[in-house]
Image 1 (cartoon, one colour):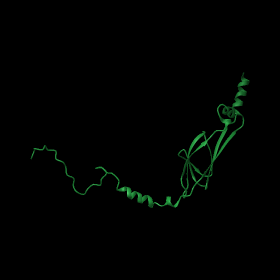
Image 2 (cartoon, helix red, strand yellow):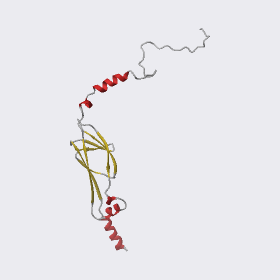
Image 3 (cartoon, one colour):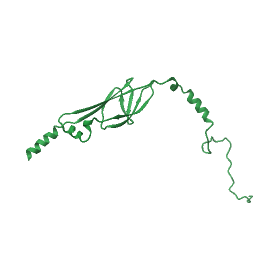
Length: 154
């Protein structure tokens, strides 16, 4: 009995693991990458990841349009349940690597020019509705309504 426990202990200590990594590249390189609203670095970059599924990706670079998208990272079939247990228990390290690539589009001259946005704002400024709380205060002193009854003339 102690011998089988010793062999089981050695087997467990010698088991491997699954190493999950992703490499993110962009055209052009040097873009700032956010995964699920967390900044992860500038491209090209390689990082470990913990789970498979849908990642919310945001890629930014000056002079280029910000790219917001979703990217699925799907587990290979040998890491699906129940096969993943076999992979975790074998004595070697299993590597699962995913490559993500994003092409950024240059900003257009229209996107850089604030003129159309400002002129549209000026057009819409007259359409704003206001209330007594959002109006500019007048320079004349405010008159208070009388709280006396109508027939009371003091």
